[in-house]
Image (tube, rainbow, N blue to C red; front, side):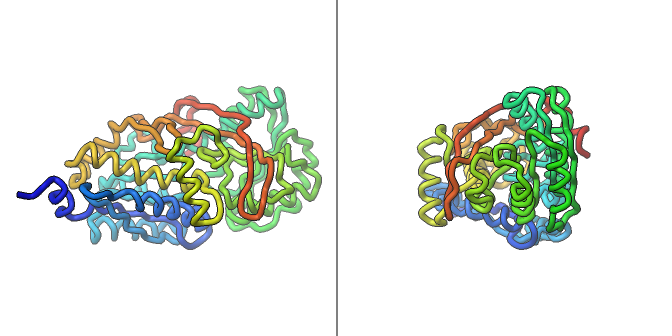
Length: 380
């Protein structure tokens, strides 16, 4: 007679299609995501549990390639669900395929609000939506300098448009004034003239939202002209970004959803940081954490609902009913009817930057409901 362990191991593995950016403009984020996923995989399949396999596919930071990869994983590999995109532009393409073809889509790190727009049925997003990040920055500036002046300088990607939309909406409600609004076409590489325009506007804070290496270019050109680090706010800061900003950025701020410098990490969170540093010689950031957590969420859903391992509709229903916490930080995970979760953000201030690490302190934390501002009408 077979044991329960035998039965679990005899069944074919549960396949999850992981379509992410391993090449192209967003590869800095996709490769970090896979690093976090690999850490989860080490502990994801203990003896006696139905094996979960992530089938990783490079979307090349190209929406058409992402759809083609999703179709192949769906039709050829027969995956239970899709996951993986870190670029909002790419995630939107996968979202269209997933919703149309009724494939559950667990988004680890892509924050464009339309990924969970009203009527979404198969998509679940772990990262708070980016319109809310802009909202949170306005609340932070309101606390730091009531009546303050903000300049925005950003790349024209879906993610950045969403952040600025939230900031533009909330700024007047928080008594703040936006004195500059500078956008760059995708692929831009120089901000010399625009940085001078920002300086001339005499802002109290500059919100810098570049993409990839251009983020570092904007940052350096602003500092070269005399903008002080304490005036600079980055809506998000990955470990590699913070290290690239360098020591001259000590004093500047960045938003995050998980950071190795947070005091409130769980024992598992601290262990994750230690093991990650040991393997990659740098701390993990929120991208790696969300991809690590995504794998653990899928494991928990299947453990609690074994029938969901072979049925997409049952998996979708189990995701919708999920009430759990991030194992690394204890922050709640619970999805609303559109697949969005209660939102939150930390704003950190950089205190030191070394060649392979950095130090930062928490200066602000806030939570909000997904629709505290009209996220789905602000950004289409």
